[in-house]
Length: 375
Figure 1 (tube, rainbow, N blue to C red):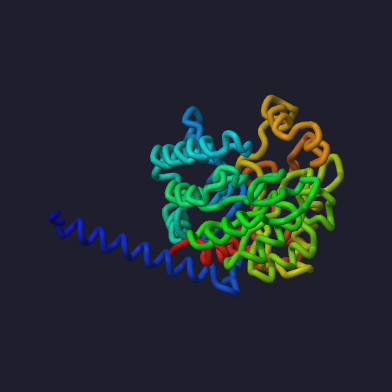
Figure 2: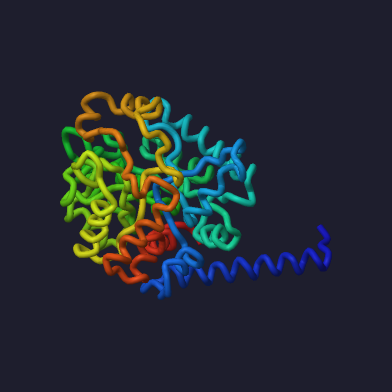
């Protein structure tokens, strides 16, 4: 194929932009984190990550609803795709990955599916929202590790080893027993390391979590959970689990879900910020991120609705009692698109340095992504 001089120069310029973005990414993901002069500078020039969140464009709205993305300042979100029930997990995950690909192709100037580390920088440079596809239960893999390769080819880059209950990999956080990872689970973690997929134990049980940290050759994430020392919830992580994660260079994304933050009927922003402080004192600020467990815009309903009832039915009566389900699931101060700004401002008021806040907002996760995802 013959290329014109203009096309050649355009291609060279594109390569230059990509190389510049990659260089900037290397700096942002470095240790120590670069210095910043203000929160505004962090949101303008750094990468902001919510490792467990999502966004659904709505063509009926002005600007298809993308105004909330701009308001949030977030660069990358990690939506959970597919169903957690083993009987339908495989097909639903394939279907939803297809829908994500369709959305990205429909809004190519607004969204990008993250397949590699360098894609994250491109989203920032081009003003797009990066989508880091995730699933909440490895049940979609079944008992065939070749399915990992299939889902990798479809763009899946993060897998939560278990949901709340047991699967072929190991025990979830609400199982009666806590037996840890199976041999199949160990093999899955190792294959994910080879492929460049992020190992996530947000819902995984106590011993399975520790096993995953130990057997993984790469740092892993606790995508959306909180500190058991502050809120005794089965989904939350103990201090020894947090210390194990930090020793391997992983990151714990703190959730804005009311149930996991305190035992109060309504948790507050201060209750949430206490979890950031607890981890910082325990292992340092470099192992903390945000995994809000809410769409960017937050939970829309202010009363129990059909979505809430479906949520309850998923768990069943025993599970619902175990996870202390109650309405509302959200915390008022962070149940909106500006939650990242609100958290950052709260940490700043508590005396956190800007450099550490930038890490929490995304650069700590970036360190993991740099090591795990392909270039």
